Length: 161
Image (cartoon, rainbow, N blue to C red; front, side, top):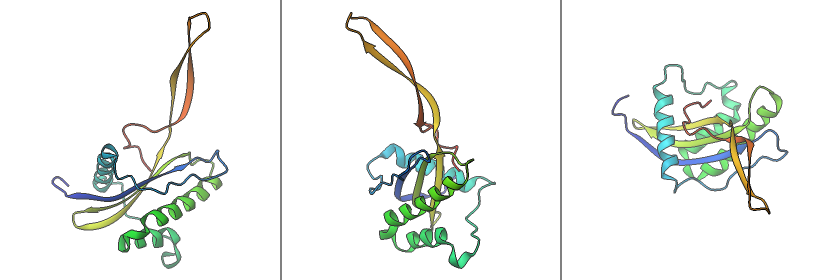
């Protein structure tokens, strides 16, 4: 794996929150966020060299929609955004059925690793955290509260599914 060449062609992020009635899908690729592309490269490399990772094995191979959408992205990059949305919709439906699947962000990427085009589909769970809220009162005093946030993504996105 050392010295492997990875090229990220397309990346997109969708918000999968099972607490909302409506799925929030983006219409734009992540092209200008250099840090995010670096993180995608780390994720792709990490997953590709992980002995427990495997390429997708699909039940009912010929009729599997997830496989069809991913394969279409590989052979026709112009379908990347629309097919990533379709993949997100399929996963969102699954999340609604299975209580154990937590909300998170779906990262979809098209990349080439050692001259082989691949589609990466990763779900990153939200991290529960607290942030501070500081208010100045009318009597010119400060009041600070801790506000629970449960929609933050971990900086180290190596904990993907």
